Amino acid sequence: RKEVEQDPGPFNVPEGATVAFNCTYSNSASQSFFWYRQDCRKEPKLLMSVYSSGNEDGRFTAQLNRASQYISLLIRDSKLSDSATYLCVVSARFNNNDMRFGAGTRLTVKP
Amino acid sequence: GAVVSQHPSWVICKSGTSVKIECRSLDFQATTMFWYRQFPKQSLMLMATSNEGSKATYEQGVEKDKFLINHASLTLSTLTVTSAHPEDSSFYICSARDHRTSGVTDTQYFGPGTRLTVL
Image (cartoon, rainbow over all chains, first blue to last red; front, top):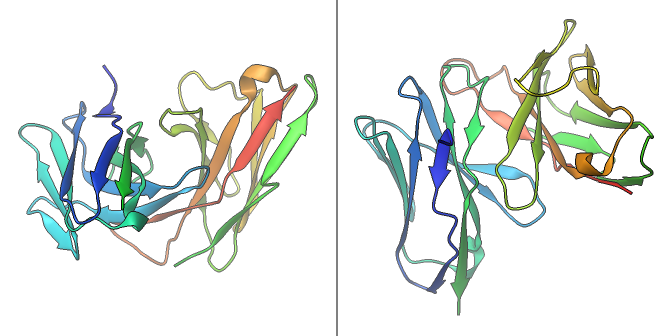
């Protein structure tokens, strides 16, 4: 079983749509959780950290369910510029020295 | 945010040659840097953790004699792929941890990556 699993997609949605991505992780000792965004042939960029209580940053909402070892990302009012691959990242150490990446979920937002 | 650079951004080489990739933190000191590899449509895989002034820590399955890591200063880590073969062709990405941000949310900043093609 992979350490971090994501639905690879692709998700093709129209502008303005709401889309949700899910991610599961296998290590119950995981401490830190993130969503990164990666554009084609580019490096990953931090989108947001995920906190136990859930957190929101503009159109993006992240949720964490430790009992189910499950993380989600919700994007509201999708923009064309949201088209990218979204990577779920988990770390079992507080200093994030061992970040484990999911393979990513590809999102394409169409006009 | 903090800036991390990599050089070269892409390289094509013949099988059997060695390739050195540099990772620099431009506006902060990074005692810890990380090297990842990403094959097409796959996740980033951590190869090794590079610590300034000490030996790198390699992940299971990564050959330390093939992927030589040197972290001689607080702003530079190098990865040398020795005797490269076509199966080493991949996207190599480094990241550096900014120790100005302390605590549980130490942030890793990624370099732009180096695309290696071995013929």
